[in-house]
Image (cartoon, rainbow, N blue to C red; front, top):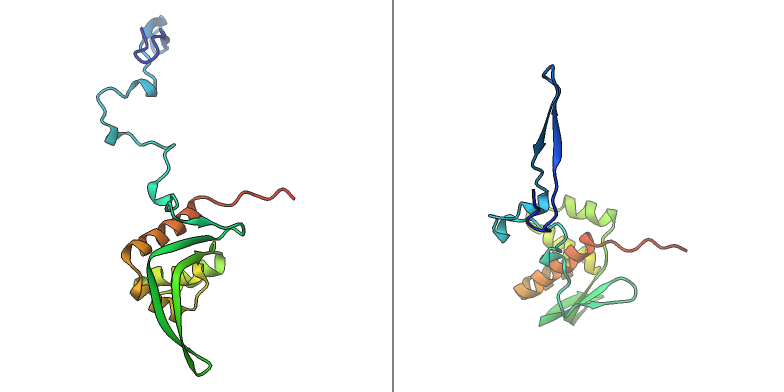
Length: 163
């Protein structure tokens, strides 16, 4: 038989051991890479491909300490009362840190409708009250890009240090 993808010939011998007289016959072997005929690209799962949601947004900045700074498309301004004084905080970017076990436990204990906000708060190391106010003013594209940063952390671990 001729291999359709490589042009190589392959054959396999089949031996029927159920009969008293062993019969040897040629059997066709079809390799998995040859079975792409008749399939559409949508039918093929590419295990080598990276999920686009795991890729960092193009404008994200990798910091030397492993954090990722995400410049926001829309600046967020909130007012915060601390020590009896009201101050305006301006967020032009959010800096995300990798999550640890405690973070995941706190996130898991949050109500379902708050888990995304708690995840952002834990990763950005902001108080929950501040993140609640920031979240409400975040542009939807900034929320989506923040989610991509978090997916990136989960899908690509740090390299193990050798020293």
